[in-house]
Length: 505
Image (tube, rainbow, N blue to C red):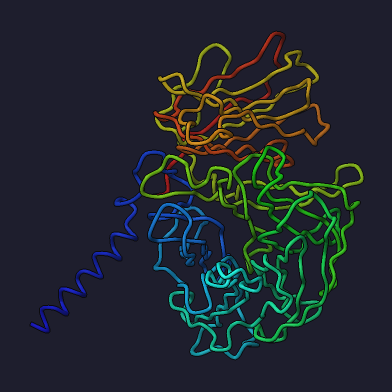
């Protein structure tokens, strides 16, 4: 009896793990993206713990395994060798006596400064926010603290540090969360940036366990509104000069409504960040409505600065019409800096690995639409504006039910746009069906649009990524028909081509 019971239990556990990790079991539902990351089931939001180690990109994420709405937060976990094909792994971090496991980051402690190393691998150390719901419900203000955990088997199993929390909330800041940690080589120490109400706090540590507050950045910087969330801080180069970029997410106040992520460009000496731009300057990572809480990978190879965001918006994220799973991540993107007048700006492009998904090539023309075999497409447009008199140029992506999205450029207004007012299901939100716009940055006569389309996602990278827009949509039938649009006048097309894409699940 005992042997049979044990065998039954082991078999049950094995079946559950296989079911969770099986792409064919979970990735064919209506609206499920086919080359973006989404959870095997239930609720997902912010990306967490992005780190690269020994050939694997780790993606942890805010996860509630019991429902398709936000709940007690865990860290879900997946790994990839190419940023496109993901293997789902068991939940990494569970709530404990200190609270839910909110957002945070992960590092590879190659010098073993923490002393956590056991065995041949460098320890992977995660730092995260504890959210003690009992404290919040009791009306306290110190219910968010910072904890750490470590793994000696490449992130497969985790041990919480017995000295948690490593940063207590002694000032009683209600929104005190989302630590991003990295090694600062120039000063030889760990640096952490933490969201604290309407500003960021910067801390230093020699060992990931003891932390000293070094400085603050804000308030009064960038877009109005609080709390700040999911900060990041990293170094890039522009015109041969080193610059530091700070990312901050805001739950409200994005350019097209709801949540969004802004950035600052400046200098950092290991302790203090200084903004190069006037405090009132507001710069956004993405002008679509569906790119929030995005952060970058630590330790990415070849010096690449790689970013991924939660492709949703708090204005409607818990209401979108998916049943077994909810939420998706943006495509991973590579970040760079470029100069525009007196400003240094952030550009992002889909990672080069996306090109491996290309299948058959097609050409678009004004005379007839192109009928694709699936909803997975990449479209490349280049228009010579100096030889174009049309004032509205677009690409319509539609289905046989008459539903559509239009991605285009308003020449007169100098704005890119995504119009999803007729993109299918929309009654779940009063603000979802809308036309979103983004001001063009480039002054070139050659206007470029690169559009990546999945089953329920559109990502526009305009003018080599100087303007980016990300929107989700929910058609009642897949969008497979593509058609070039223009209003009156002439259109000088340099390039109008595309590729059907392979899925990765």
